[in-house]
Image 1: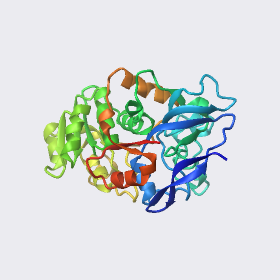
Image 2: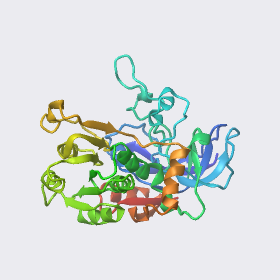
Image 3: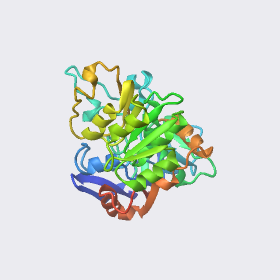
Image 4: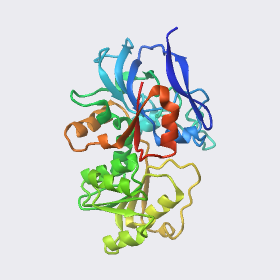
Length: 364
C-alpha cells in the first residue's frame, strides 16, 4: 500500500506528521498532489482544541497542486494539470446549496434546534481538515471534483494563488457582506491575512475611505498597500473617537470584523452609523455579548452579517481572474516557507505569531 506524509490532529496542543495511505479515488473524486498549502488561523483553533475535529484527521484546507488521478465521472480536466480547490468544496446537490448558501452544504438543524452537520458546527461545506482529511499532506482527495477544481491560469505562481482557496475568498466575502456602496466609509478591524484581503476587497467594491485597525504597525503599513486610506493603531488611539472624527460624527457605513474577539466585535458595532452594517468574519471561541448601548437597544437599524467563505470552481475562477488582471497582489502575505517535514515548527511559528509572520507556504 502506497503511503504519504500528513499533518494530523492528535490531541489539543499536538499536530504531528504521520504516515497515511494515499487515498483511493472514487468516480467523482480527484487525487491532487499538493505543491503548496498553508496554515490558517482556523487550524490554530483546531490545534488548541477550540474547534472540534476527529483525532487523527489530516488538517489544512488550502490546496494548490497537480492532478494525480481523476475519477471516471470527472470530465474536462487532465492528469498533470495545475489546479486549486476552495477550502469550501460543496456538492451543489444539498438543500443549503440550492438555497444559495453552498458553504453550508450538508448542515441542517435538528428538531431541538441544534446543528447536526456531521456532529460539527454549521460549517459542513467546509470539508477539508474539518470532516474529511485535509491538505497539509503529500496528497489530498477532492470530493465532487467536477464542481470544485479550477485550473490555474498560465503565468500565475503557487504563491500568487495560495490565498484564493480561503483567505482571499473569506476577506472578499466580508467586503461583499458589508453592503459597500460607492463613496462609503468602511472600517476593517484586524489586519492579518483575512483583514488585509477585506481591506483590498472594500477598495475594489468602491469604498472611498477604508480605515484599517490593528495593533501592529508593520501590518498597518502593509494595509496601505492593500488599499487602506487611513490606519489606526488601537494601542495608541481611541478607535471609536477617531472614526467619528474622520466621518464628521456620521459613523462608518460598514465595519468588517476579522479577528473573532468580544472587544473587536463590540468596537465594530460602536463605529457604525444608524443603519450601518457589521460584517463578521471572525471565528469566535467564546460566547459573544452584544451591549445594549452599542446595539442602540436593538433600535438602530443595524445589520449583522456572518459568513463562511464561498467555495466552488466559479468562485476560484473569479478570484484568480482578479489576480491575473493585476487588481491585487497578495504575494506579500506569504512571509515564510517551510517543508512539510517541518510542519510542527511551522505551527509553532504561526500559532505564536513570531518573526512578523503573516502566512506560511508549506511545500511537500
